[in-house]
Amino acid sequence: MENTQFRLAARPVGLPKDSDWQMTKEPVRELADGEVLVKTRYLSLDPAMRGWMNDAKSYIRPVGIGEVMRAGGLGEVVASRSPRFAVGDQLGGGFGVQQYWIGAADDRHAGLHKIDTRLAPPTTWLNTLGMPGMTAYFGLLEVGQPKAGETVVVSGAAGAVGQTVGQLAKQLGCRVIGIAGGKEKCDFVVDELGFDACIDYKGGDVRAGLKEHCPNGVDVYFDNVGGDILDLVLTRINLKARIVVCGAISQYNNTTAVKGPANYLSLLVNRARMEGMVVFDYADRYHVAVAALGKWLQEGKIKSREDVVQGIEKFPQALTMLFEGKNFGKLVLQVA
Image (spheres, one colour):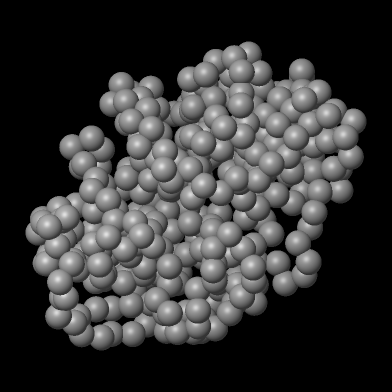
């Protein structure tokens, strides 16, 4: 049995390119006691992966040169020498960009856990019931702390995290304004997800859009993009506003210094709070979010949209879709 893998060949400068990757093939070794062999079905492609490729101090160690690229995924147990998992079990875990994962069933870094595909389709377990959904749930509720009647603005509104943030805020009785790129995405955010409005940063004026759709200011801003859009929202925040720093995809491929907020003094004037969040900090409570989000999904109160690319060989090109705004919803790579 042969395992196709993508390994990091070089530290990217700017947008990752094909030469930053090495596709390798190696035989799958024999299982040891306590180990399982998982056949990867789907992989989650996330903006955070770009940061993991840099040799810099962060909340998680960088992927080493020559190592299989880190990625969360879903798969099926095809062989087991552990009482914890049986052949046929559907699992989520940190499998990396490869066709097969082999290791200890209790490997805490892999974080293997069973998923129930009766509750939701597999790709939804990489979106609303996966890391993006956990990020949205805890980032909004724990850090943003929205209250009914408040105005919540979400950038990257059609993306994996943004779509769930906005829908959750609507469930809490908030006015929700999205920011997304292109008319099709903006229409989806309003017509399908139920946002009150969406500002097209590609075809419109974000400053004018914020003024129009947030006449009473912004109470919570869930930031997935950073850069100029963060600066513009800071000019509209209210007293005691909360800014959730989830990501800054506009800055990840910079070849110059990251652009910080020029309008940060608005935090002082408005006695506002800007706080970063990393989803792994809430790992011991994921089950709480899965239960809540799963219930809303089954009741039809929230929706989950995935953009699936087929074929592990397309990994390098699929990953760049994230940074070019080409994906529509949560980006998933179908391996098998």
